Amino acid sequence: MKVRIDVTEERPEAAPSLLDPADWNAFRSTAHALLDRLISQIEQAADGPVWTPMPATVKRRLAEPLPREPRSVDDVCNDLAELILPYGTGNTHPRFWGWVHGSGTAGGMLAEMATAAINANCGGRDHGAIHVEKCVLDWMAQWFGFPKTTAGGLLVTGSSMANLLGLAAARNRAIKNVRRDGINEARLTGYVSREAHSCIVKAFELLGLGRDALRRVRVDDNFALDVDRLRAEVKQDRADGFQPFCCIATAGTVNTGASDDIAALADFCRSEGLWLHVDGAFGALTILCPELAPRLAGIERADSLAFDFHKWLHVPYDAGCLLVREQKTLLDTFADRAPYLASGAALAGGDIWPCDLGPELSRGFRALKVWFTLQEHGTRRLGEAIARNCRQAQTLAAKLASRPAIRVMAPVPLQIVCCRYEADGMDETAIDTLNAELVATLQRRGIAAPSTCRIGERLCIRVNITNHRTSEADLTVLVQAIDAIGAELAAATQPERRRAVS
Ligand SMILES: Cc1ncc(COP(=O)(O)O)c(C=O)c1O
Image (cartoon, rainbow, N blue to C red; front, top):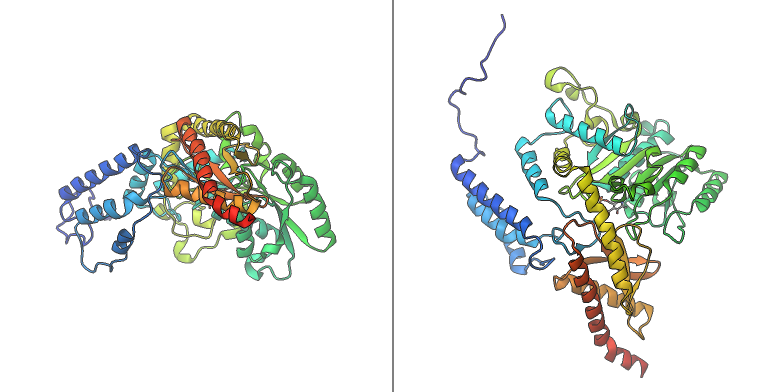
């Protein structure tokens, strides 16, 4: 006889949860007030300074002892509003242009709330969140032209992690039984441009290959990897007994936004039997812009691809993606489940779980905020936001170049503009110091938040526009501020310079 329990019947009297609200209505009104506060914060993202440093008094409050007894959720929300919400990085502000930050969306915030409500563990099993992630990955495979029947991947924290895992798969293919035996005597070498992101170096260190095994290949005048030079280095390494195993193309370098010739690298990798990994952290998203996508030609031939949703798609942190053309390469690299995790019937269903494709077992439901953003804005509008940033970068470069004291330091293929305030009579090192101080002053005064980088030896002001709230008026504010603060700082150093000369 089948035992039936009517799950629609009211649950028998039970002791209340220790952690759920005792009064749901009171909780509801506190939550609605907080949501209103959060929506206003995003609505008014352009108001006030770009960056507000956390005052010492607030830091002291945060350092207070951990409470042993419960506090009311009202009190905790008040502390949240007073101690934490005003002191963000600033990347929701229209004049935040530092590093490569996305600026978030109001819809993304809703998705994050829904994610917490479901509280899904996406390590595996058969539930909705797993199917949403699968759906997002299928869309990504379509975007980048990866084969529908074999491609696969994983949502991860960001491109640093996606690069590491893609390169782990490359290493696994290169060394038989590396999972059992380690790398032992293998003398693997990989190749990447000198402009590549530092996380690729870290990946080589973490994979036990050592940073010297990563050859940093010279770039051309456009800061793209010099393919002739690559050819020569691989040949030399083979002659010296090394085992070249992978080449990493960058689609959008962090300093200048340069892209390597992925099609040429794909040809080269095929002829040499190398794994082609593409670091497309932000640049890969230009696939959504008809006028920019041709720069990515050849990306569909990559063995693996890393990119982020939290950068140019403005999905709330964190959300990155690793896509591989053969899902099997990830299974070969990572699959290994303890008996208690075996696939089975019902909720334990599904052949391949995300934990088979990467090192993590418990994983959050990152796919929901990606899915929500794609649904809410659609690829056309998201692509237009990216293209607009690139047009803004061209406008900014032209405005900067028209100022006699400002020099644009590199081509502007996408959204990054590097420039330098060059005061008369200063040597290069003093100009470096002045530009570093100029960036810090812009941030301290809350005017704008660019960051710095080095082009060759020289320190530059680096303006990265991955910001859907930036307008042309914001760019004008920046140009005027660079000119005015540059002149102010140069004037302040004049007495020193006079003393040095006399
Ligand atoms: C080209 C490139 N690769 C990798 C990364 C690292 O990405 P994440 O910060 O998402 O780990 C960045 C970050 O800016 C980047 O620009």
